[in-house]
Length: 202
View 1: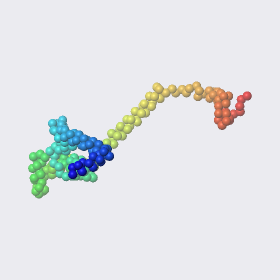
View 2: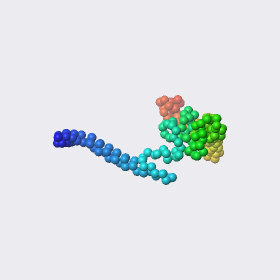
View 3: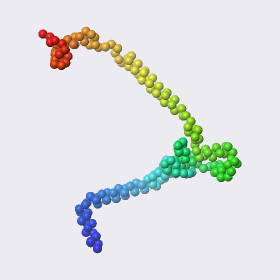
């Protein structure tokens, strides 16, 4: 039975050696990839990660993961169209923990400052703060005006110190007339060009 199983595999490997080469190469690649993934990753703050994928807990710290979020990754982003971040804005502190226990009861017992503290522990900005104008247009307009004024001053510099206001002598009417007469004498383009428009000089 073993010979019967080995013989077809040998024949197949002889007829199709590329298939076995590809499999062996892929096995080697997978082995190397596993070795790379298994290498520990050290961070500047002293944390060590023993996989190729970065652990999200390294970035979020002690903040609580409260939902799926915008894309399934535990990050905090203030978005007006999706106001449900995956993690809370601030880590859990003893004061916030006491307020969390207190908010499970009647909210009338919470003061306005405590409600604001609970909100700020979970969110960074309110909707009014998210929709408020940032004033970024001022820096954009200012930068654009600086660039345009620099271009004008550069043009004036080259106009005054680099360009020669006097035209070459060949631009004078006398020089242009002499050049035209010479082109006619040399019969330049005599069939359909310039010399064909004037009588041929004798």
